[in-house]
Length: 427
Image (cartoon, rainbow, N blue to C red; front, side, top):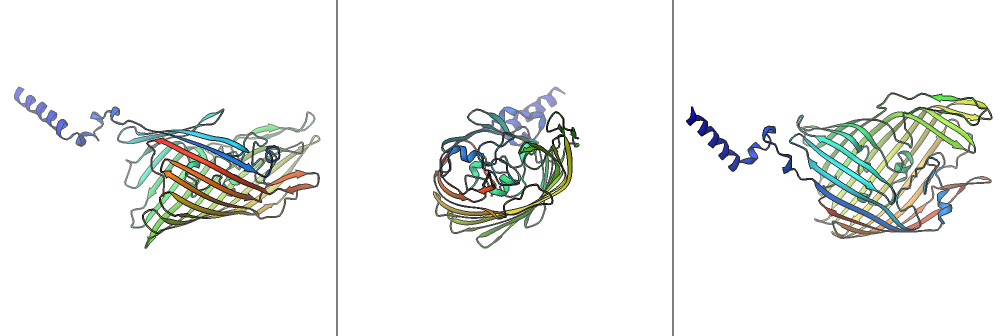
């Protein structure tokens, strides 16, 4: 018996010494010290010059879509979150941690630092061991709705988000707490289907928390009841295939969720209690000229539908209107990479529909459009200098005679730097 035990111990010792990788998936021999996190730091700064002073910029909005494009809106958030100040901007710093937890899970976290704020931008686990092609993710994360929603700002091709993103989803796009499931079909052509069940706290066009409001001490009180959470569903299908040196990436996405919002305009409190849905289509074509040079044509279209009851309380009287809002828009951009260092790009974007079944205001006629051109130089994959010019014709101010169109011309010089190990971005 002693000889048998001795032989078994020697065999185990030899196996661990000569083939540790064979035991790395055995949870009984797992050591988390082998999983050292990748850590990276990204800093984004810019200098902006516009034809409007800061006071004028802070009052601009897109009628019926965003309440404060630059600066802060009535509820403390803005649609144009980056390079929004004339002069120097410290846009953000991101600290990123990423590592395998064990053979079954990985963990990622992104901490977002502003000049006077710190927040958890993302913190989520990922599991890939359930079945071939199946991935589960949970925590706080950027939804994979659409083409660019899951990308951080430093990976965008332009400094500002497209109008349909900032207008329909807000400054932070769709960043939620929830659960995500994706399945890649076992076929020759890459095809992925995904579904996300999210809490539904997006401030722009969603929200599930109830509230009570009135316009003054003599007004009747209106109670909006909270909806059950989670209160948002996201679904999408994306595919990709090659034709010669050209990669084609089409996709469809859909969002449905509760929509409860409290607002104030001209001294009157207003509330909306209903649902919102966003329909989305995307198409990207990327043609490679050589190993570093390419032409990329990217397009996204969105349609927002909001249905529900709109409440107005004024002078002690509550009025209820059945409201339906339909808004549509798109962007189309072309980026040319001359080599590994130099890139050029142009983008046109438009919100061409802004319809209300009921509105006390007459909104300016659409389209609301914007033109942008940029050139950027990559010193390496860790540093980038970008010069961008845009003409934004979608913005308005409110004057004595109603809405007044304000054309904003912007020139932005931005510098983005990163250090440390950083995971690869999606195609």
